[in-house]
Image (cartoon, rainbow, N blue to C red; front, side, top):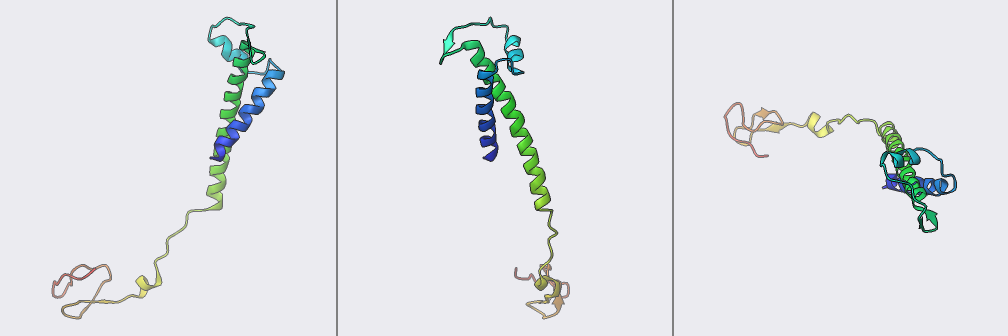
Length: 122
C-alpha cells in the first residue's frame, strides 16, 4: 500500500516538474518512439505533446521510485525479522506417553503400540 503512495507522490511531482521544465528526460524520447507528430493543441492549458511527455516522465520515475522503495522495504523487513528457529515446546521434550491397552511406555508420536499393536488416541 505504501508503495502505491510512493508511486503517486513521485508521479505527481515529476508531472509538475516536467510541465515547468519540458526537456526533462525520458519523456521526450519516449514520445518520439511513438512516431506521433507533435502538436500544440492545448489540453488543460498545456500543449498536448508536453502533457503526454509529462505523463511518460511521471510513470517512468514513479515506477523507478516504487521499485526502489519495495526493494529497500523487503531488505529492511528481512533484517528486522530474521528467520526464527522453531523450538519444540517443553512438554514435547519431556512428555511421556503410555499405551491405552497394555500400559507400556511408547513414543509421543506413536499411533500404534509397538508391544501390543493397539491403535492409540490422538
